[in-house]
Figure 1: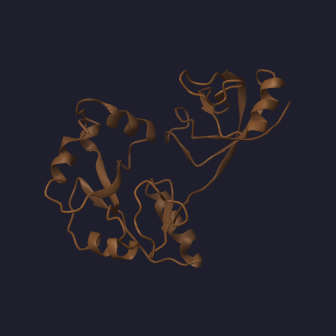
Figure 2: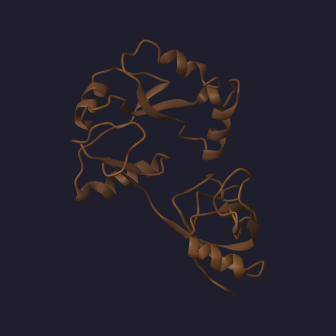
Amino acid sequence: ILSVPHIVEALQGFKFPFDGELFHPTMDFNKINGAVRTQYSTKDSLQLSYYIFDIRLSGTKQIDRIRVLNSWWLIEPLVKCPSFYLDADNLGFFLNISLSEGFEGIVLRNPEACYRPGYHAHYMWKIKPIYKIEAEFIGFERALPGTERHLDTFGSLILRSLENGRTFKCSGLTEMERYKLWNNPPEPGTLISIKFGAWSHKEPSKRVPLYPRYDPIIRR
């Protein structure tokens, strides 16, 4: 990745490849995403750190991979995500700590599960709050060119925030919901109920829901 040469340099010499994400606790999602996607380093991209939560060792149990990861001493810009043994009584406590530090939530992993590249079902679960709000319906965005899905209906809903007037897209509809909305479209300004896991920005005047999903429509 050309935008983070300081991280690429810090990773040199390690025996095993890491699994993690580029992050900065004071940057919102859009700012991080923009910094990572540049073809050159910027002031923002050079502030990013690589938060490491696993080692890509196929066939090795989670508990053993964590032991290997914890045996290494890492310094900025490499950051080890803390790992704890949790039971149901402690989930809320650690979730609140994570949220207070700017993270979206926590990830639960099966300590006996082996690493499988690109496959996380049945051994990794994300725990984060679900927000529900209403937004104004503006219209439909047609399916992207080159795709074969939803060509007979639409790609996403285009909505407007009641909080700040910003527009955003919403997906996460069943095929039946798509057909119903497409064939009986709501009037512009109709309130649509959506759910999502995080905001794009900390400032209310700038934020929109991240990856919003459709909830039952509310007609007014």
